[in-house]
Image (cartoon, rainbow, N blue to C red; front, top):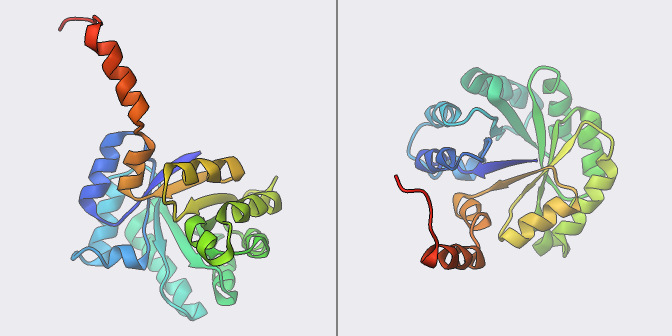
Length: 212
């Protein structure tokens, strides 16, 4: 299992790095629009702040342009690149073209059938927008579970995105997701529980430890 930061804000990436257990960064066009830096600069800076993958989502809609954009992203990010390619007919074609040379993920999957196509096209990751799928389909966790059944014993792993609570994050993993990507606030929320804080306070109130 791997947990990623879902952000293109450099300061948030720095904070995530300091947490120590966040292993990569995912971006999308909306997140990249939230910084005033040029996209190329943002991607290079993000790559410096993690030893793990940096996900970049293609915005081109024509096959040849998608291939060119994907290769340009690889020139910018380097070996850390994971391309996010939309789950469309043309997108799957682009995965087939690009996956032999660049690690690819298929994003915005809303059916287990699309997960099957992602696998056959050569995608390393299949991305499900869990909370958004719940709003649109009724049960995003069920989508993850169905995708996990389709992708069992394959080389394609499920990345759960659009997570709005620690409970939804845990449920996604229980349903078969291999990885999570979360905004900084949700990463912090996952590591925090009021009962844990109260327990630590109780131990420390009358306890003893090493002096230094």
